[in-house]
Image (cartoon, rainbow, N blue to C red; front, side):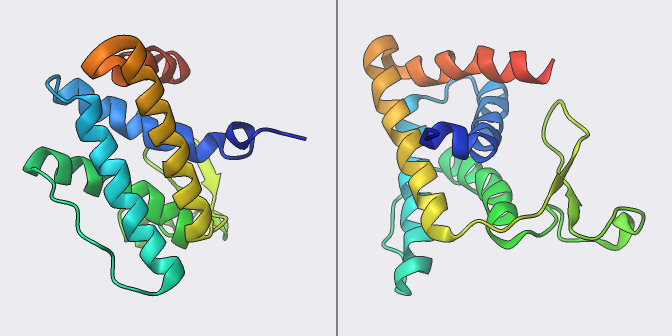
Length: 155
């Protein structure tokens, strides 16, 4: 039997890639802010599962910007749609394949929609990691822990 991380490695790594890229541009970002963003996205996608409006989480401008960046990739996984929302330039790409502009890659990924409930589970797993590495390494423990993995994976 495979682990959760093995089953969802592409989603988890995609989300963390966006977080690390954002962290590089915003070096004051901390684990608490990332955790708040993950919590807000859990509430958003959970509301899609239970068909009720999401409960609010107050986000700062920086947290909101990060949340919107992450939401682009998670919406792509859930809806199987291009990140830029414009497929007119992708006429030469085979049907069922969407170009995803992840930092450090130009690969094509097949669009296989992921249920919102599974996305919630991915964010819960990421929050568990934030809490663990935050205890180990302080206020940016999670961010500093994942950074070498992401940059190592994209070199």
